[in-house]
Amino acid sequence: SAVISQKPSRDICQRGTSLTIQCQVDSQVTMMFWYRQQPGQSLTLIATANQGSEATYESGFVIDKFPISRPNLTFSTLTVSNMSPEDSSIYLCSVSLGSNQPQHFGDGTRLSIL
Amino acid sequence: SQKIEQNSEALNIQEGKTATLTCNYTNYSPAYLQWYRQDPGRGPVFLLLIRENEKEKRKERLKVTFDTTLKQSLFHITASQPADSATYLCALDAFYNQGGKLIFGQGTELSVKP
Image (spheres, each protein chain N blue to C red):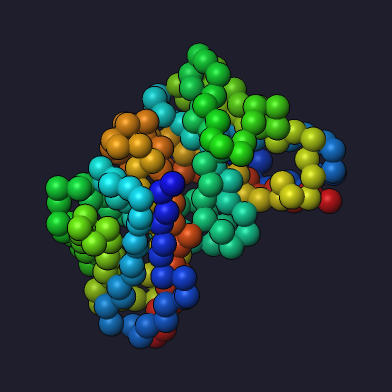
């Protein structure tokens, strides 16, 4: 399995600002994903972070709002741009070693927007 | 579109009893199904994966069944302990065995009383 570290673990931000969340993996992985988990809800996939190319976004999520970088096979960032209170959520990254393999998650970034 | 439903209400059981959690899905035939455990403030942790051609999978006190005719998976914890209290999520592959993307159910909160 892989060990995933996310930073920051939590933050409180002002409306209109942006925050970049980092995800570091202890080994090279092909598949990396970003999820959002709103209070009391399940996980919703935001995008698949592709190494060396643009991320693949799910319906309802756009690059301008959630730009993602994946410079190598062990690291990715998710930026939440122009934040509003509706963006208050937990953001999680996960990795998988293959299409029929389990996903391993970081502990998430708990984000509150004032 | 794919839809996943888990026991919507929290499940409260007595220590030592068997907990049974349900995951139903519609409009899809997944290649595999996964179960995760999530504790408050933590990311989901993988428990078991069962493939479409497998009826049952076991791991220590955990058992998962997969009925592709009924479009249902059951997750059992035998001899339950208070430490088993958590939210349990089922997840299906979003595209038949490709891409590694998962769709998660909303989770069932399990509480095991001593």
